[in-house]
Length: 173
View (cartoon, rainbow, N blue to C red):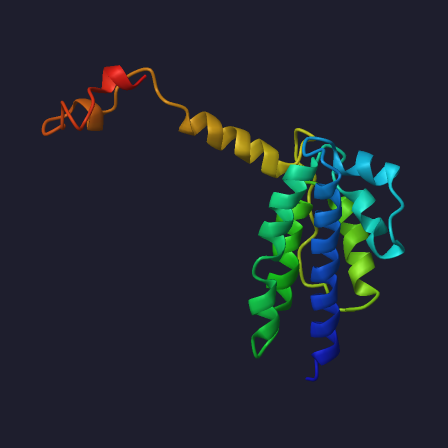
């Protein structure tokens, strides 16, 4: 199968996404929602799908998600065989998790150039709470990582190192 043109289109799309990220970052408002900034700027028609992002996604969050979604694309696009599911699923999970309407809009945009993009993935579900599933998962992970009020066995068990250079657990709080 000759997929040179699909690879080229996906590489151009990667460049567009990085350019969008750069443009939003230059706006100098990292905690401003992306959709709000987009409504204030003239956006090229190629990037109009960005208006379908979750309305709560901030510029700094968008940057982190774009990096996560597209970081493997250069290597994946150089592989002998294109992994269609991998290319689409990383974007779906990083940028559109819990936002099926936004994902559908994005897929329709990319499919104007690469007809197979996103076709082999299962239908997305909206998160139960109405917030993107990624945010709910991050909040749960932060709560789990919060320090416990009671010392763990590692802090109080036999063989625990105490004194300099290992401070007593009570003095580090």
